[in-house]
Length: 343
Image: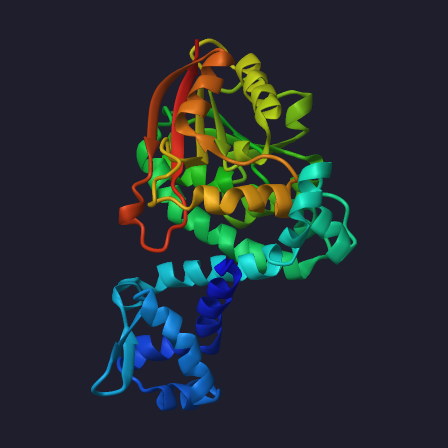
């Protein structure tokens, strides 16, 4: 019952500048904080009670001053900004839409987008179009996820020298650019595969980053078929958008496109094998996110489920690894990597 109120109390302290003031100045009274952020001290103190309860902040009774707890006192600034961008995305993209979660589940569509924005489709389509409010809240959060996950992904994935790589559902080419930069070798070529309307921005991005000789674009729909002639297929943050039937269609299409021995490397958020694991907030977040706010379908699975689905589609899984959330300050959920070859 208190989830929404706890969320907005924490986010409001960030938006007001209370957290920034305490990180900068150390100990401050409610009166000093009120003056710093332009709000009545009594109201600020009401908000701070919850943050003290949860040890986000601590209170010195003798001095009457607040100061950061271990989280806000120790988290690096880039990680904190990622947390705040995540909170802002939830506020703008999710809080209003999940009012219609029941209707979204019944219809398999994102009802909130229609009711609130007059848009029939999914969040990614809406954000790519005229709905700048959604894009400006969602894109920074996703940039933060990419910045957090890409170094870890490339430290665990091997791309053989000279490979022909296909970045499946690679959007506007940044995944291809990062793939080339992290694995540059003579003859390596990376191709973005996505809907045809992504071609022009992809090619422009390749030119802007000086990789147009090493990166290219193929337009198409993954459900109509996957291009052939590639040694490695990358599937990053895409499978979780779909239900089981569609995931199997995607993996089957990738298998049919690869020659025997061809590789697929997958990056995807995963639920813990023990759903009750308190370290992961995946099941707290993703069902409402995907069903009520983005796709009207989909959601992550356990690593063991993705492994089984890969095997059902003719792959031999060669490696699985999941992130350790204890080493990732501010991270909400763990991602997993699955590497497999065509049997």
